[in-house]
Image 1 (cartoon, helix red, strand yellow):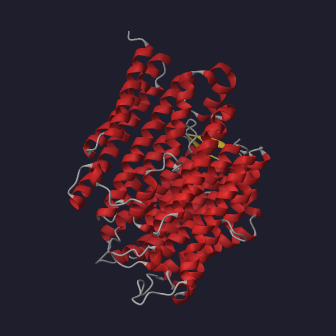
Image 2 (cartoon, rainbow over the protein chains, first blue to last red):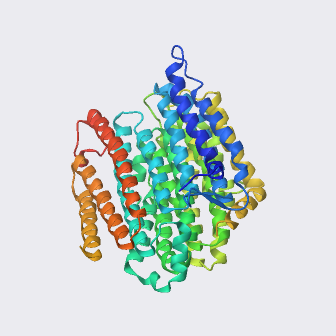
Image 3 (spheres, chains in turn green, red):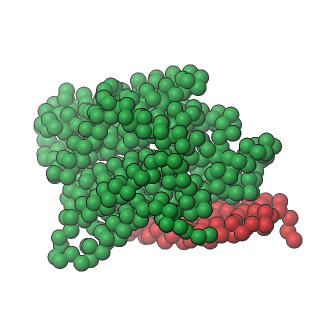
Length: 484
Length: 100
């Protein structure tokens, strides 16, 4: 096994971000005094440099490191989603961590290292590199979830850790069984094995392998009934980390799901689509129904992220390049609207008090017009109301499902989307139509220039890609052309 | 020479024990041990398959898995220590601040 310079070219963005992470750690150690306000921007600079090295990956698919890592348009597209997630997370974290007195270099370095794991996951073309990337990402995020070290943060981190380790056990055992059945763990190799040997699709070892891999991924994307960890982990973790987990982990995990299910298990579509059909329906319905019952906005957003995973699963069930492009679009749209919404949540909190109960939002729409406007925009987008990116994302996925004849699943999806309007609009109604209590819960906003910039960028993303989605959809379709 | 099916069966049993352990045991340290058991069951499966196929790949994967398991245990134990300092509890039923 030899590495050529062409292989290293595929790894350049990852190396740049790893270097940025190490630089952030080093910079804190050598900074004179306690000045470390520039650390997140050092990280963002690293992400920007990585972004400049990425466009070269668009184009014909290549594979490097003996088939471990792809350099194709699909990976490049997901990398850009992850850059947006990473940069927005760092922007949002800056003022938040300083206010909470936890602005340590380790946080920014861990975000960057988790980002590298996510990128490797999107580029992995070998089940073993999928697993290693997943662990690189997850281990960094376990630590991030517990970063505040108080009771809630530690509990969130522990629950995420145990269920995360449990699920990677399933994924890994599935990989071992597929290795036994197909004789290889390369994604292309598994496709060839299933395509050339019809009897393999009926072998118990192969089917158990496919099933266990499905369970492993279902845990990671928080699909019902493997979602139990999600609300607790999302609610207890620092809000900026919750935003990062909900968007980045989801994007990376679905990128790996697309590669594994659309390429490796392509010939088994009839077998797995039925299982995922049920998972998608359960995930959408349970996520939405439970979200309606929540009185805490942060926990409500956790359940809503489960519901969004359900919508994306509808696209996976459809299994066509069209659906894959819809999923990529949705992941980017979800990154903007979700990080934006969590940024608003961070702003209403103050040190030690998150103020994320729904009642805390009463009257905030008029007291802080900019916050009200931003939160309303993100809630509209999550509910899927035009002209926002959330609407286009759902439209693309449901359209692809209808083209494949999944009428019932689409109907359930649309009904779910309609039900979700209730709890998203409830936030807006509370902000504008409920009077503020006599003793105001939220007296000032935890907003700095970086927080404002992150919210504005997220808002512009939601609006821009909602009004002119054409270019992005073309790019996503181009990304899928090389995948399948 | 141990037959292929026997070793795979043993690894399935070990994996099952790990899964059941995570689901029914309540001490967080034991939970960590059960997760390790699952990963080691996978290692046994990799070695068995590698031997069966006469390929060296599976043996390499075992080293990957061992490394990841070590990293996971390091972070996991750190989280447990952090949790114990915050809550004075190592019993999973007592870790129930977040629910609803």
